[in-house]
Image (cartoon, rainbow, N blue to C red; front, top):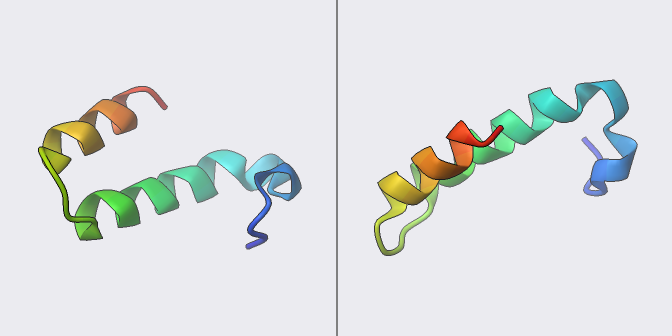
Length: 43
């Protein structure tokens, strides 16, 4: 996958969900579960 979202074209939604899932499961920080869920619900 290209690092540039402009190049994702018809796969944009698929790639964005994949990145978000990886982010939500692996990132550490304050209130990450709620932050992840908020981002996931806005897709």
